[in-house]
Every structure is written in structure tokens, then in C-alpha cells.
Amino acid sequence: MSENNLSTSDLNAPEQSMSELVSAGTMLKNAREAEGLSIAVLAVSLKVPVKKLEALEADRFDLLPDNVFARALAASVCRTLKIDPAPILERLPHPTAPRLKTDESGINTPFRTSGDKFNLSFLNQLSKPFVLAVLVLLVGVVVLVFLPFTQRAEIANILRSDVAAINSPLQAPMSSDNDAANEAAAPPQVIDSTVATSAAPLAMSQASVVPLAILPGDVATASPAMVAGSGATTGTVVLTAHRSSWVEVVDASGVVQVRKTMKDGETVGASGVMPLSVVVGRADTTEVQVRGKPFDLSRLAKDNVARFEVK
Image (cartoon, rainbow, N blue to C red; front, side, top):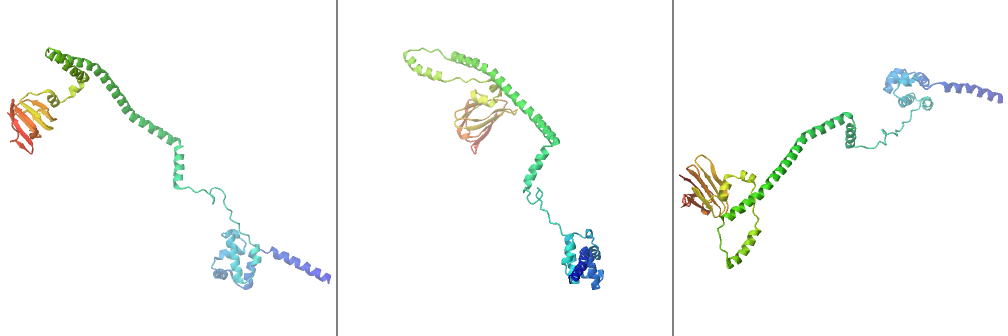
């Protein structure tokens, strides 16, 4: 009995070693041929190309898309041939497990918005030498453009200070000349006790009044109408405003003798080449004298505006 058992175990050992040496493709091919199916008919039933089945039976897994496809195709062939797929799948290469990426390009990559990308790209652009050179050139152009304006402003300030320095010494002599003229024009007075007592407050009031100095530049830039309104009270036409009124006097040659808005109580005189064209804005508040005689504006006024000529 022991000899028979030993002989049986010795005979089964080579068979098991031989079955382990058979590849998965060979096992599928033997099972297909045992069923009497051609590889073309099997490919049609599985709806796969014949070359895929040939590569599987020849163990050319490099011709297949991947190991997962090879194992799925082998399982489908086993179901069609009605054989156990476990021994065949054990001999097929196992699919490689997917490796999770742990670097910045994986699932742990920090989220960045488009604005962050723009900021990074902008900083990268600024760090380039060419961009820095362009920025330096732009700054230089801006300095060259705006530097003349600053120099002009400085020159204007210097000129203003020089003009103020020139005009300031002229104010004192002119005020002294005006005081001398006022003293010469004043008539001699006999001072008695009553006049002396009444003159004391008057002297205090005059002392409190500061004489105004007129700069030469102001006199040169004053218009003829302003000069006439300030002191001229004689002429062919004399206008006196009892309220604010606008007046205009133009002679025959087109020269404007008077054109201004008169204040209450102001008197203006004008003369020129005849005839004189006169326009009074408020006839009811303006008194007119022509060659020293009163002139009635009421009969000429229209909408309180009087227009007439003096020949």
C-alpha cells in the first residue's frame, strides 16, 4: 500500500509542475480548440478584433492597451467557453495600482485665482531687465516733459518778487507827494479857541486814515473808463448815477470814451469826436447834462434804456 501511494504522488507531481508552466494564453487557446471554435468566430461573438485575441493567446500583453483590458478580455473568453477563469487570471499580470501625486501638481495643489496668476506674471515681467529699462526711459521722459514747467514757475516767482521789490520803494515818495499837494491846496485858516477844540477830533480822525499808495503798474493797466469815472466830472456829456447803472459813450471814430457800471453817487464826464453815441442802462436813476444843461431821458427811454446822440 505504501509503495502504491508513493508511486501515485510521484506521478501527480510532474503533472502539477507542468500545469503551472502553461501560460494563460496557451490555456485559453487549448480551451477554444477543445470547444471547436475558430478564433474568428470567437472574435465575432465577443465583438473584439481578431488581433486582440491573437495577442492574448500569444501572451503579447504589450500589444494590448493595458493589463486591465487583458484581464477583462480573458474573463470574457472564459465565460464564452464556460471554463473557470480563476487559474487563467492568476497567470495574467496584475494591474498596477494608481499612484497618488503628492507634489504641487496633485490633489493638494493650492488653489489660485486668475488675479493671483496675473500678479505673479506682472511681478515676473517687472523683474526682467528689458522691462526695467523701459520703465527707466518712461520716467526720464516724464521728467523731461514736466521739468520746463517747474522751471517756468520758479522764474515767474522770481520775477514777482523783483517787481514787488521795485514797487515797494515807490509807495513812500508818492504818498509824501500827495500829502504835500494836499497841504499846498489847503487855504490858510485862522485858529481860535473854538476852532481848536473842534479841530482836535478831526485831526484824530484824519490821523486814523491811512493814505492809499497807487502802484505805477495799476495806473498803467487802468482802463480809460475807470480813470474818467474816478475823477472826470467835466465834458460834453456828464452822467451822474443815483443808483447802480450801466453807461456807454462812443465817439464818431469808434473810440469808447466810457463803458462801465456806475455806482450810486458816481459822476462821469466824456468828450470826443462828434457825434457822441450815448447808451444809459437805467434812465430813471441816471441824470444827464449835455454841455452843462440838463437833458431829459424820460422821453427817449424804452424799457428803461435810453439811447441818443450828441451832435
